[in-house]
Image 1 (spheres, rainbow, N blue to C red):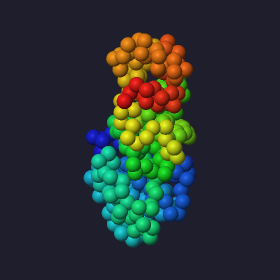
Image 2: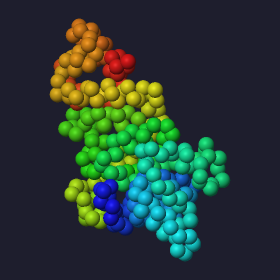
Image 3: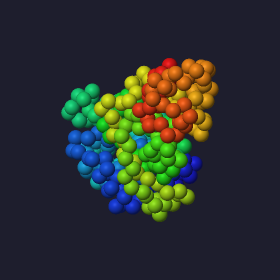
Image 4: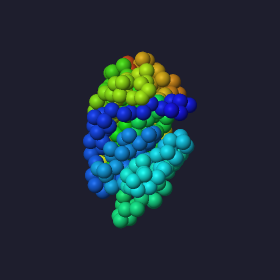
Length: 272
């Protein structure tokens, strides 16, 4: 196993099937799988969808997975194996090669994958930018799953929670024990599903500055809003209090108790 990439391969058949079910597979789906590894998920997914684009960064694994044709093939015929870094690849470039009858511009796609911890946050950020998938199902470390679904006031609620929840509806589906992997990791994992909001709370052009604004707010999560906003915007206490009063917010409240919708209103009042 290529330990340099820190890979842990999921092999439990029942959990693999639950992940496929979570993707709500349909016969005309195009699915991009991130981190195909040895193809355990790929082979269970392919019979239930139209096409699978299996992305694998490790050259040796990608070559082994894509080797052979017909009876010798390691994956079904409706699978394209791509060697590459999911953070660098363009989703639409991959979809252009899918031999399905629908026009490429009309091929909605889904994402699925076991995300390495080191790229989880940037890959989720990429998932929420155009072209967005119809649905995404990710296997992540338990602490990341906790943060993604955390409500305001929870100790794990933070910038990642607000950033993702402002664009997608996030569901934590089930936990995955370390024993389901080979070799077993030292942490527990969880499966989450992201469904893009029909009407996101933040517009596309706002998302990068909004993320910066929210990260800045949570860097002082335990301080009062008045102090946080004064430090972040350079405005006077009187100016800050005036806006907070207009928004119906207590200046002594803390960022960690605000819902994503309120962060959006604060950003539009202060963050531009």
